[in-house]
Image 1 (cartoon, rainbow, N blue to C red):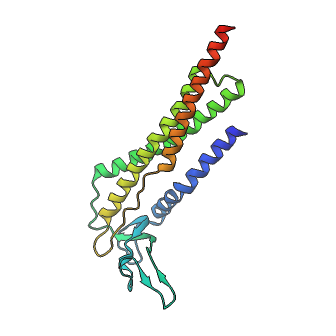
Image 2: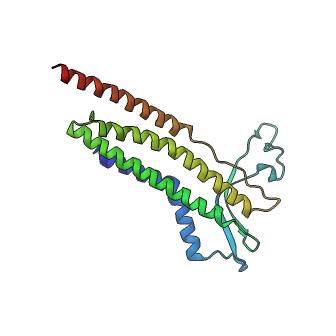
Image 3: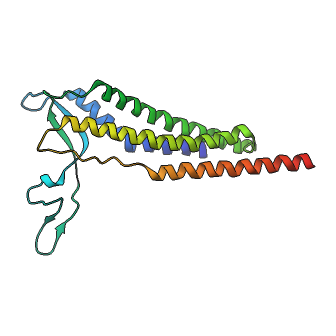
Length: 208
């Protein structure tokens, strides 16, 4: 049941973070990147727009009435822009695709290794060195994932930025995932603790 739960959770993560943009791109491919006037366009999914562009807003803040005011306004929207003069660098697009694929591969690898660890617990061989190395590998992959994911967010931002012209401004909403980084460090600590336990177990067996 734990093995099934791992794949269910990682599948849910995929559908939550990746599937919506895949679906949007798929539907755009079917419908065509052409607006009602017949102009070729390109769509930026989930773009964060500069709130200062809102009429009546000042520095991202806006007075609603005498009782309420809005602060740190955030706007997320699908932006459709005229693609006639868009010229995204091929290397940037290629890098974005590579980083996307790398994120998926890393997540799939983590799920696979976790299942192997669960099976080793079921077998009672978790304290063998090869299985302890798998736990350590999970921690390292989590740390690598934070770096690759941040790089993906940065390339995605620069691609979006290249598609937008004044007066519309795209905000850089990319953030480093410190939560996953902490999880990776905790897994490395657990792996080291298990390693010490394995050494003590071997010493006891030799003593006996």
